[in-house]
Length: 134
Ligand code: THU
Image 1 (spheres, rainbow, N blue to C red):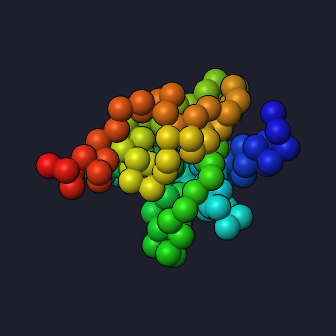
Image 2: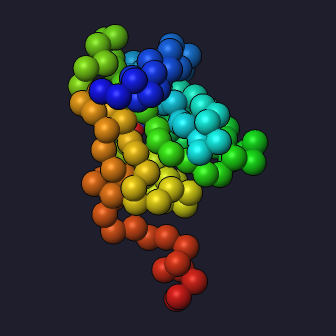
């Protein structure tokens, strides 16, 4: 894997150490690379009211956007229940929809099996253009 991407994977693994996941025991970390070179990390944060859980990817995106950073190049995502991050952790549908708002179809999603294009995971998007066209 390209050096830039393996660095992002390492940052995602580090971010997973802060995962608050007492209910699932599944620790997820994300590292989001902005076009200006800044990296925003995130982890999953669960809640006793389960549906209020937020995924690692959305934590990273919301941190970035709340700091006025809205242009992104790539995100690395890892997840594991036992410390072995070798199986790819595919972003959930809710996270893919959040990505739709800020990322082009060629945005890169880096998983443990390599780099993917966003469009592989969500080829048909409900986005703001469709909303504006009615
Ligand atoms: N999770 C993420 O953080 N990202 C994903 O893309 C998939 C799922 C979290 C949510 C929950 O805390 C745990 O993994 C189990 O679903």
